[in-house]
Image (cartoon, rainbow, N blue to C red; front, top):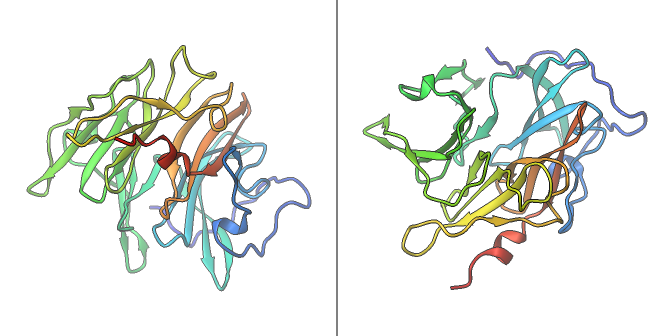
Length: 274
């Protein structure tokens, strides 16, 4: 069972960078502009693997996964308490975290936890058939539509809850590339962001966005451009609950993946005007 009361993990960070008295929004970091920057260098992003990003709706908890020196993955949380951010390790990685817009559920692929008065519940499994799918990331809108990927398969799919049970999966009708993964749906379902690999891209995986049109269909896939995508692999996009910033993973080299962030103004800039 994951616990927010477990001991702090010993970590290796750059000397002089880590500040144990972090205060302010976004772990006290200076917000980025329209070009992607490393998120919380020496605090969140180090020379190790840091993956995934999940703020709670009140922006007072931030979850991510780090692989330690022995290549073991752990989920880490920063919590804003007593006017500063405090770090603890919640337990081993059991999935890719996504927190629902109402803050009541943390999805972990085909698993999930529910918020209780004492913290997060034990890890539970989705109902059939989803408990048997190799789901990497599952996200949901405020309208109760679930979007997910599956390891080794190309489509991004979705389902609705029907009478308290998950309905049948349907394939999302958008122009997809070679490898599609890690969808993130806007709370109002007006746009979807994911990562994809295409020959027309900037390098490895790139991040794309599509907008829902007036007739309910999805528009063309739009590459987020070279201010966000790089010649490396850029993946796992997540928009902060306040809608202001995009966080994502960037592969630095074979031994290092960092979390980056960028101003989310591109969402409106790229949105079709008609």
